Length: 151
Image (tube, rainbow, N blue to C red; front, side, top):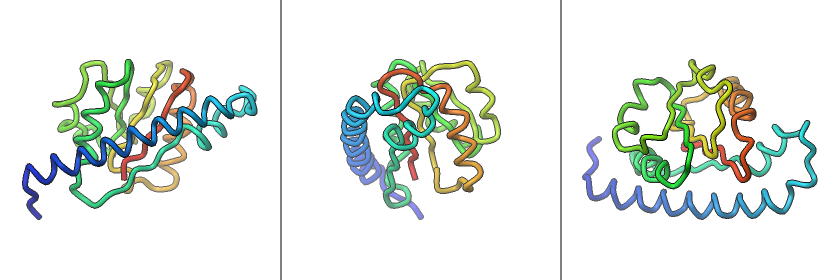
């Protein structure tokens, strides 16, 4: 399946705008409900208010939207199914962006991010998703912070 560059660019703008709106909404909810969650329930808080799932048609520009969005955060991270898959994103992402794969989540240990993108999240098994949550939770301590599953 071949997609024209102009269609991908237009659809990436839509995915980008929708994701930005969802990030704003998540930020509002994080501010509103943060006091209800104790620090020992950070993972629960993250799953409830920091997680955003963005799903659009295949080839509609999810990865391109991630590239645009990395420039809007101080310390973004992109998790892909494999590091090889993240090469295209890396070419257009902010130089401050860290990259990891589902199999190399230990790369996140000891780091702090304000946003983590999971590209092609539809490829992940339930176990992979739980592993992402477990690895991301200690890294997303900034307020607000976001875990974005791009499906």
